[in-house]
Length: 308
Image (cartoon, rainbow, N blue to C red):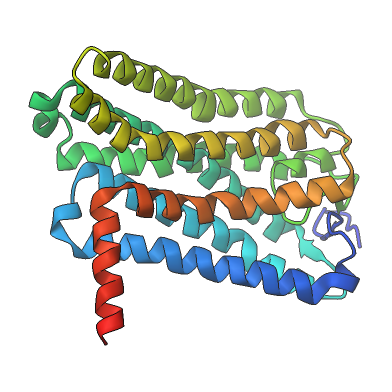
């Protein structure tokens, strides 16, 4: 199936006994996908429909949840088709596209979390200047840059890779991600350097900024009274929980997968399913339960549904 011009199909070789458990896998992942779409979309709609939630913090939360929906939609439909197919294959062009979207949205999450950290810092540490710093234009610029920068940088890397020759057409995974670079005949040093540049620019630097920001918030909040500390913890804890969970899975996906560590297929399969399921399901639960205004609107929605 390998063509002279690398216009070919790639075999997704990361599935574990898919012929035996195909229907079980399908039901579990279909249920997870429906829950992801419904839970994230519900909170986004609540934020859009209620004017008291039209604040920068909630706008960033809505953007983060939209990012989760797009992230899942890039992976789940193809994954569900593969569970019911005799052969788990994908065209080279489609694999490049899926990789582009996957990397872009992964890096976008870091930038959105950095924007949220900045918003919390200004709100807690500079409350008198909040309205002048976090204006609508500033929020819009942060949102655009959070999606535009990863898109442009990822597109450049994919263009570099698309011109390289492939010697392997078996992909060690269940969907196309960073491991696509392992299909090259000869590893490109320029592409490797560019990959490190993207990793530092779009994940490490935002992560350092986030940690610095929350450290400053922690220091300043402990210089004030208990009520001030409680308010700071109440608004920052959900963001920190999301950051920690996403960073852990991002570490596996980028570092372990990209470096090609020889881990068992079953372990890789289970961890990959967690990578694509945990955060999109975890985010709406955290923000729905921990953010008081959102939780209040969810309770109101539940009461209206029961009354009908």
